[in-house]
Length: 257
Image (cartoon, rainbow, N blue to C red; front, side, top):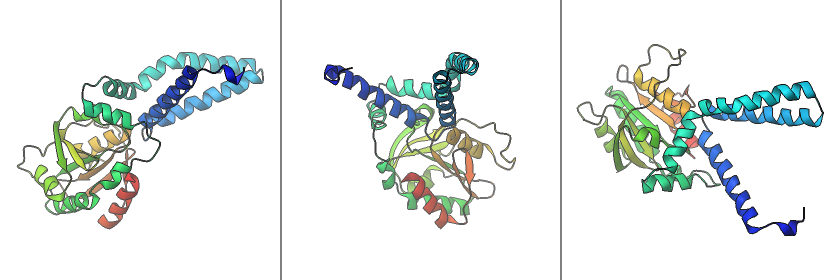
């Protein structure tokens, strides 16, 4: 093929495909779906190698698996497909703006401006008073698919606001709080509950909800137990251990940077 025959539309086509693949990666990054995606890529690479080496039996088996597997992918990636379509078809300008921001090749610098000290201070004070709280901090994956279950907000993150929202007599204390780019964007949010039987029985619905949202997205969660005042930090569907709030602050800054 002569490189002089490449059209401008061919270049545009390649760039659009690259952006689409990059967005797909951002969509599944930090979720269990990324492992499945990597597995499919590995299987496809092995399939190509078996074809080149003319290993007919293994090639036919892998080819049949990939053919049938396309239907299974729709089921496996249903949450990611749903999020993609929700953001793409949203009539909300801010949602479209967040959708376009996914196509960036640098880190999520906006999260570096989050008032982490205020969040930790609020959790520490709520821990002392045994005030239950569930805080979700967005990273790369959009949380629009759960935000619409709660009340939309647009408040700057600070300690008094967080404490007042989770105050026991506040009408907003039930459900989760969503924090995005140093703004509280939603309260009373209903999160997907994890059914993982490995979660200890001493943990209630707040912790199961935190496990659920961190399994499905790359968000991180802070949970304050109403029963014993313990502060928990969750990432990738797992509890992250820490000695004290100073260590927790370092972990949180690292995860959000």
